[in-house]
Image (cartoon, rainbow, N blue to C red; front, side, top):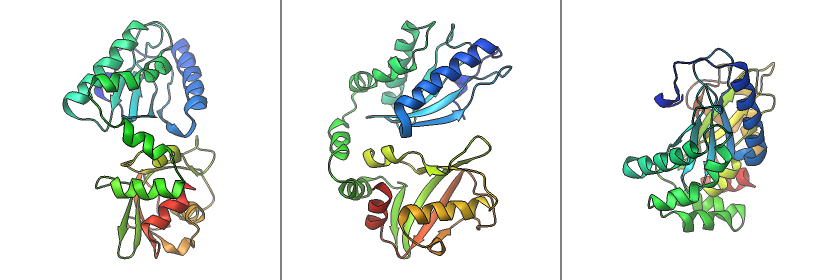
Length: 256
């Protein structure tokens, strides 16, 4: 959910909904797999749209649009992986840019300023980010796994590879796919594999197991969910064990 500063006392009107939807459509086209819609704008609601964009060197940047944006309100920007002083400096720096652009669609301009704002906040991750963007996908994946913090999206176990998944499903999801491959290739400590899971005549976990099996070139029977069974709803967050597959090979197959 959005941070508390996403909320407002006003309700969305038709013009705000239309303008926010148009801007989001443009951002989706620009950022592709690096864009994840969290909540859509709807007329009469007390909150606007929200979404995440993967931004180097911040990682996931949560953007929340107030109900009166873009006519008068300013969006909020939260670097979800940062903490303390750096998080506050980045948030304040991006907010200042948005304020200067008040009255117009400004999200792309603000995101374009992320490298400068991050540098002013003292972030020193550019060299690592650049190195992860070059070289074969196999090398990127192995390096990401080796450098990833505890709780990263892929880890080795005696039984195989453990994957952390973030699953989105519902009527609005039309195609089952992994949506953040670009982030996984670039960011060493990406938190989870983000998956859109389209509705099907089968159960969600059944479809999720088949999607992972196809992506990792294994049998569906080798995919085991540590919480829930294939007959249950997939849920928003999930751990999947890929049996008899080492983490280096799993990362290589997934990212290529």
